[in-house]
Image (cartoon, rainbow, N blue to C red):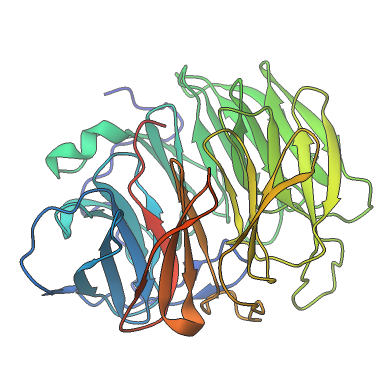
Length: 400
């Protein structure tokens, strides 16, 4: 095992067990607690393997659906607020609970023995065949080969402990370099890069409020700041300044097929909840930012990328906007759901976008529905009505 030298260690199923009463960390900006109750799996019909599964959270559990038909395959009861992310292979998703990251085999509709315990599990990042987890309550970073999840056992991991716990994010590059954020529970300032041996090789502390990450074509990494975007490219950090003094780009979406990153763009530091109408397009070649006004607001669960690098934004007008990232022009508008309003509480359900290959999946909690759209034609493929309204929406994603 190639452990990092900076307090590195491989976690076991019991390592880093912390108080179950501690809260989950928000990518949206707040904290709340999830229950540590063990999941109860309720089968609807025979529990056979599900192809291309989707996993949607609801208040009290998870729904597992067939990604082609949207047929509900299984209901898994899991109390509390739980988050879902692709794990990086064709079978698993990561479920964030109040005890840590748990690996769920969505194809077989069951939790595995793999778990990374720790308070406030945060961002899950997939890149170059690796999956990187950041546990906010401990500052732990765990990196493992996504393919190692196949056996259902605890994967061997390369680990790093941040100088101080904070709401952070990390990404391992193809050559083993680790880009990870800097901060404390009160202040986040930038990022550093470690080589394969755990030695620091680059650092930048000019990214106030650093949050979120995305990788563009050429393995350029972008990190959001409150005054622009911090890029790590060609072995060094470069800052892309925003045109406004305060301009938070806290959520980004990248694509290997595009050198342009998609980000949100908020300019009111005092707002209880800002509902922006502009998006940011960050050209990693020129290190310039272009702002595009969509004429509609959106939420932090509205951003994604298409199979050809298209920038996708699900607006509160109910439209899935398909945007050329080079020009900023809207190429297609797909009527996806009805008009909606982003709730003040980030944990409350709202229409959510998840993209896999050429299909865009959109939830419509107000109607308890999920829809699938073909991104090339813009046509609706199918819809389903579920027993309860869904919150987060994710699925298996392989081949990244």
